Amino acid sequence: MDYVTVRELREKSGEIWQRVEGGEEFVVTRNGKPIALLVHTEPSAVEDKLRALRLQAFRRVWDALARQAQASGAADMTEEEIQAEIDAARRERQLAARGA
Image (tube, rainbow, N blue to C red; front, side, top):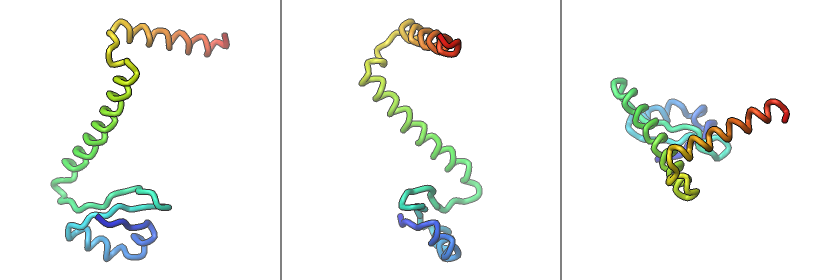
């Protein structure tokens, strides 16, 4: 997988698009930071590829939340304890909104 800057993509778009159509993949960067991926896809596979990317992103977030819950002990809370925390947070927010 190659890296290409936004400027390079603008200046060499024809060449880069041909390479993408040939199966090459690119990470597009702006100011040295990745902002997009260029990958070849068939028109019939667009929705499946997007779904797979979204699922992968969801799993990454879910795993991070699970690790955080485990580290904080929240993973061991009962439903009643969770509801009590939610209720307490709501009460605090209502009091803050009233200026108390």
